[in-house]
Image (cartoon, rainbow, N blue to C red):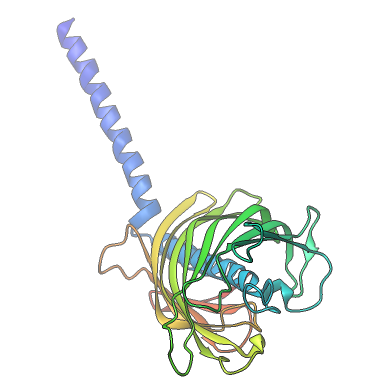
Length: 298
């Protein structure tokens, strides 16, 4: 009986080890395996998800800046053209004092089509310590049931004016942080994102017209994306400054290098997202292992 017990136990151990190896191999393939098609898909998911998050929160920046001249520069973001489908509520948080101010942009619950063609619902809530054109001021944005098209947007977006005082010509610079962001689609796919960027104004400082303002964006981000059964984590860095304009809903130029968290130092599965040469459109190219892939941004 003792011998039979040992044999049964040994068989159980072998089975358990075999199962462990199978599970381990499955997890490895989903992260840093050797299948070219799988690796390409994972790299493309990481790069495209990072690019989509960049576009969504670029829009948040524009809306926070464009709420009014009192807090920023009126006439950008959803305020770029006349539209009656959202309402704006302004609350002075300290009686008798202009700042701090809370501004709530309410797009309703049924869907509000903005001047950029996007459908939004829910609320964007921003609190300002002062007018964002002045050094030392900041704005923090959160969301309440906020959707862009069908994507549920969560997280905290903050802008700090870190411009150098008394420079000629004026150089406006903003530190922009996105913390614990999550973009969730109706099918359960999601993108989690944290971003730390510096936005510097390059053109338009000599006029009062926001639509001629051009900025460069520098910095890095990290994220995690779920697409079906594929879960991918990544880190990204801007290798060529992104160029944003208030008169375009997309990033028009610049490159972002995305590396998956599980990748080794010499991995060829590095994605380079190229937003283009300056044309205002939703097209971009992701190059993975030397092969370009055309993508469409939201």
